[in-house]
Image 1: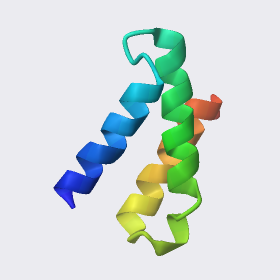
Image 2: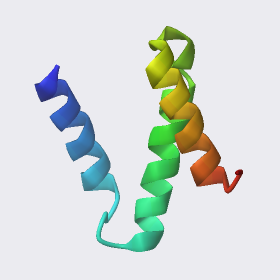
Image 3: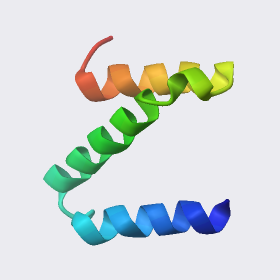
Image 4: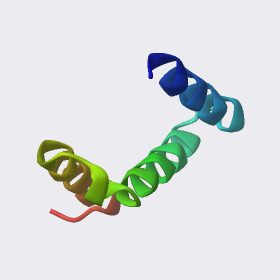
Length: 61
């Protein structure tokens, strides 16, 4: 699983310049959106964390 995570992060890093704040935000939005698509399959603590991340990235309080 750790190797898969590294490959996924490497794929995102190769498509986005994570040193550029604008691209960091875009990458964060992409990752949070991806998590949102599988939220129902996550344990409760992960669903809660995903909801917080989504509120943060969308500016909700």
